[in-house]
Length: 221
Image (cartoon, rainbow, N blue to C red; front, side, top):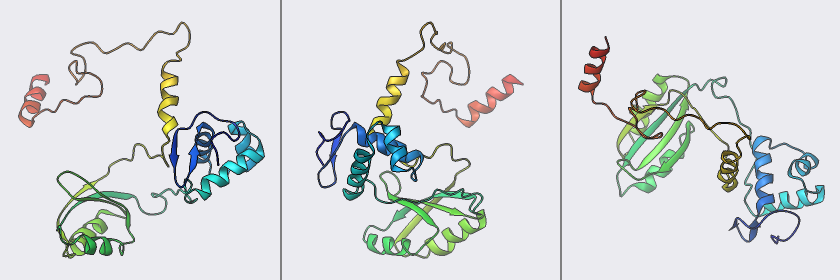
């Protein structure tokens, strides 16, 4: 489908086998992110195009593989899988094929990615309790010859999870940042020396050694 068909802005990028992804396609994907079961009529109204145009664009997104499938999002806590853990795996470099094959046989693995850094792969699992995670790591992963070492980290709180992100998200956020209401004052910046950051720029961290931290606590008490 040509980028000139229907309404929408300029092309944001070429994907799949030839669909030109423009601003209207991104708006459709934005609406579907909130409700994948929205009707074509409601989709057209939200995006601001005709029903026929919405249907054509939606089908083109599916045919080109941009929309791969529709699924349900569940509450894992209520489904009985309240424990989430990240397992970092060091793989024996000549045994990647075996590692992938064995991992595919583990239904509790929600996600796996090959990574750079100290470890070779990261696995995310969801289970009912800590004991199940321990059993998986020590009895199943450890018995895979391709696995050389593991490191397990438990997730305490899942702060943010989006179904997917779009190229238009950042542009929209930039627009919001520059559209402050007339007469409103900008947010005051923290003064130097306030808080734990001790004047560090926002977004940077200050790591405190154990000895230094204990000394600070004694001074405060």
